[in-house]
Length: 104
Image (cartoon, rainbow, N blue to C red; front, side, top):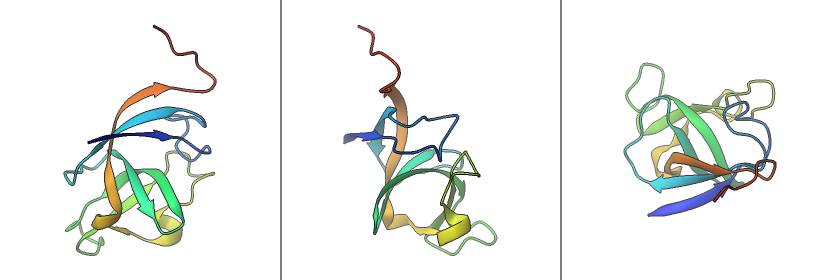
């Protein structure tokens, strides 16, 4: 299953910018370095996986996630690791941005 997500904010800059649209593939197979769509209690967020379940210091069944822009990101440094069940899937493609025209 594929879902479109829209980047809201600058926490993933410079990789993803505010207004970018990305395709997210539903999966439970997540690797370190993947950008993931996470269903937090307060809403959806996009973050990069930096720690996997079973890594030293990562509680079982959880992921450690960070934004690429440390100065503007609320992430595992603030709220801790996220349960694997909250991870919807991984970003597979950047589609377009409100500031970049869609070609074709």
